[in-house]
Amino acid sequence: MWEFRHNLTVEKFTDYEDLTLSGITFIKEEIGELEIRFENFNEIKFENCHFNKTIFNNVFFSKIKFINCELNNVVFTECNFNYVNFENSKLTDTSFIASKLENIYILETLIQYSKFSTCEIGNSKYDDVKLTENIHYKNKYNNIEFYKCEFNKDQFQDTRFKKCDLKTSHFKEVEISLDDLITSTLSILNIIEITTDKGIILEE
Image (cartoon, rainbow, N blue to C red; front, side, top):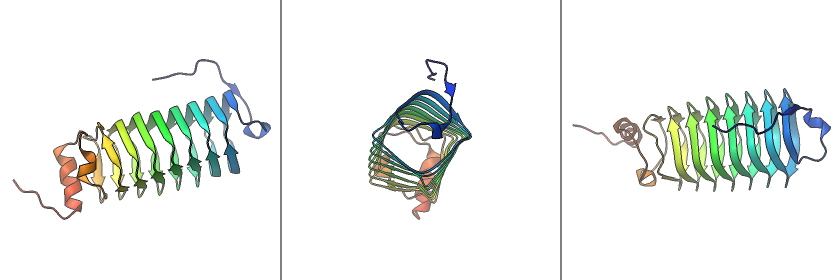
């Protein structure tokens, strides 16, 4: 698990006009009705912050922690994430479009009614994450451990899982192709849950 290299100073987000930020903690901030373009966020911690109708376009995030945060109607377009954590957070109607996410750690977080489109997500871990009615469209998921996650009514369209570990997770009314899971690790229960939703009955 990575750590910040420096001590972070506590600041107010509204104090910044130049949003190339580094080495800062933001606590209980309301960040909304804002578009942020072509900026770099490095070693930033957002704690108990609320993002609403915020657009991030071509933003680079490196060593970022979102802790106990809420993201509502947030859009990330052509963003790059590297070593970013979402911990005990809630993402609702949030979109990740044409973005690259590497070394992501998502812990005890709810992701609902959100969209992942043409993204590449790799070398990451989802730990006790609840995913509800999200759309995953033309994504590439590579080397991700989904540990004790719950997929509920998620839709996967042309989304490939390569060398992912899903064996401890559960699927309920999920639209997914077994062909897109080739090379990934699943349990017998996973297969039963996925195929049952397709109307296939497995018998001994």
